[in-house]
Image 1 (cartoon, helix red, strand yellow):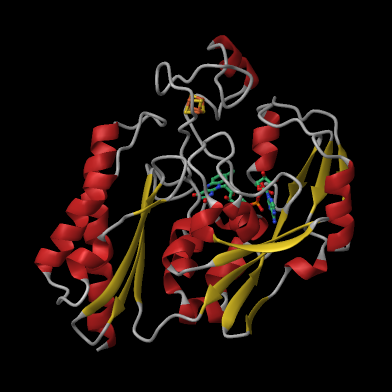
Image 2 (cartoon, rainbow, N blue to C red; image 1 turned 90 degrees about the horizontal axis):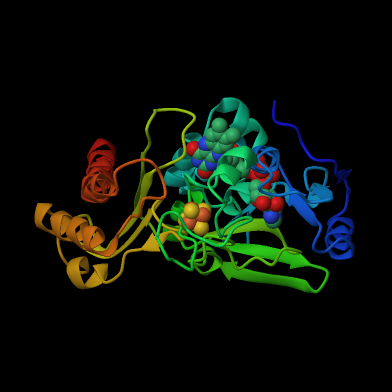
Length: 333
Ligand SMILES: Cc1cc2nc3c(=O)[nH]c(=O)nc-3n(C[C@H](O)[C@H](O)[C@H](O)COP(=O)(O)OP(=O)(O)OC[C@H]3O[C@@H](n4cnc5c(N)ncnc54)[C@H](O)[C@@H]3O)c2cc1C
Ligand code: SF4
């Protein structure tokens, strides 16, 4: 049986109290929301904080509402709420769908959108028990100084494996962060960094308080496609989020495409407007976009699935995302 280490559990009611606890115990404290990722990681001794500050009792971290022309989602809203909220389903169906693919119903009831944004990166050589990792001599993400994925590598390339962030990026979302020093807002795209040890711009004493989404332009077509080993209770081993803004019924205004589940940071595929803007969304454009994504994605062996196959699936999943938006708009016509 895997046991938890001893720690003190704090359950503040106010955000200010939570932020103060994170400051007072700096270096030996972590925030916890649903705990669906942090608890297993603590059992594996990947994190051993002496203090946990629960965010679940903080009232100000809830709510899904329309404010100042945006939709605000409180960081402690459960994945179930995000997947089923009428506002999310109406304006951002790809986000509702991405949330609905996470884990299983029990975990979605407990896990939160804030926790999903701050999810730790994953790797075959990391998400293991202490005993397992010790036998291998650990690795540079935790307790060691070598990388088993990139031999001689000095930077961790563990995979960003959360489902909602790629979609949030295609929707132009941002996140509000708070600490005792004040508040700031950061685009979800800029929130992530390419360092698998700590792949976000969030400082350890900062709390994500909400996610903010701009109202989508009329006719925005979106899709989320997730490759996983099983159809349920599985992290993505590749994910594709797509948002296509149309100038009119057939002509593309712009395309936002994010591929994730491969490296430490969700990858925004570049130079798509050169390919597609002002053109008709036909098979040639779709193929050119799929090829562009393939060229820009280079998965490494951070999970036990063949990297060449995962790369080949990038094209397939981009095509599927386009097929999905086309069939949805045909159904709506
Ligand atoms: C069996 C299983 C399957 C899973 N499958 C998937 C999957 O398919 N896709 C997927 O995306 N995830 C999956 N997960 C992971 C997890 O359930 C979700 O990512 C969930 O959204 C995490 O949210 P949480 O509130 O439980 O986070 P927690 O476990 O509470 O926290 C996760 C991390 O975020 C930090 N944190 C949490 N909230 C905040 C905040 N507001 N501000 C700052 N830091 C914060 C914590 O300190 C911790 O480092 C799975 C987990 C399990 C156990
Ligand atoms: S990518 Fe390398 S350093 Fe990062 S978790 Fe995996 S083995 Fe460790």
